[in-house]
Amino acid sequence: MSITLNAPLDMHLHLRDGDMLATVAPLSSHIFSGAIIMPNLVPPITTKEELIAYKNRINQVSKRDNFNPYMTLFFKADYTKEFLESIKDELTAIKLYPAGITTNSEGGLSGFNVEELAPTLNAMSELNIPLCIHGETNGFVMDREAEFVSIYEMLATNFPKLKIIMEHITTKESVEALDRFDNLYATITLHHLLITLDDVAGGMLQPHLFCKPIAKRPEDRDALRKVALGGHPKVMFGSDSAPHPQHAKESCGCAAGVFTAPIALQALTKLFIENSTVEKLQAFISDNAQRIYNNISVINKKVTLEKKPFVVPAKYDEVVPMYANETLAYSITNIEYGKSYKNKDSKI
Ligand SMILES: [Zn+2]
Image (cartoon, rainbow, N blue to C red; front, side):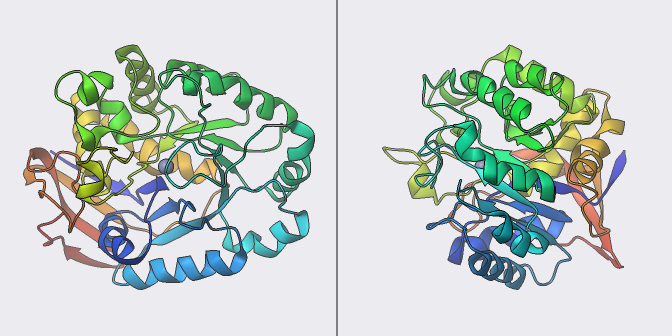
């Protein structure tokens, strides 16, 4: 059995910078048509100059591939309408991090006061710029996302024209919120569709599965699967693929992040086929995202996968992927854009 995906999109991706960017960007740009690029560099992307320079660095290392990096800014409550207008053509979304909640989020927002946020969020609503949010409080780790749902509701109610993307949702509470507000949408990762907390810490600790938000309970995973595999029109794929060098994962003080970019399409194909919902994968991997993101322009890329073993490399330079050294049932066998060519890259 083979399946061909049109213009696969990754709507939440960390590419980092420098040597790490050079390692990981080609792995995504080769197989995806585009990706929402997260702005949490050190320091984070907050100006037009930084955003354009980062986009150029991404284009440089992904040059051989047709790939759209959809750029984002790191949310600040003092962005003016004039500033947002001046950057609108370079910008696809703005990403909001509560302060200190995950990797490189120290400069994030420390409170959610409607009056303080109103000038920037009203300007974003008028300019039709979506707001992506890492939705966790600083409460107990298993409850952080569920506690944040009330903040999503407050924002959705007070800014009804603002498109709010609940990033990498992991709980049934977030899934339920989707249908209560017209302007709430969500990305879902591969790993949260596959694992629960048991896979991370139920036996020997698995540092390469440790991420924020942490994987939750089986009933949460079931709720995520229901909307993703069911092709719910308000959810889309966002890998949250977040590379760290091996020494930062396999250490005392393990960094949060799962590196899934090179295995995501293969594993998603298996999951959707096993659940007899393969006809919904196109919606989850691209069509919903195109619609939610205001008919974003996409590069026409067709990616074919077949049932053929794919041995996942142990490492990509210093980064260990999810399923390292394991054999996946599906491989990418052809990628076409403009000119057709066979995928001979054994790494993907
Ligand atoms: Zn992320």
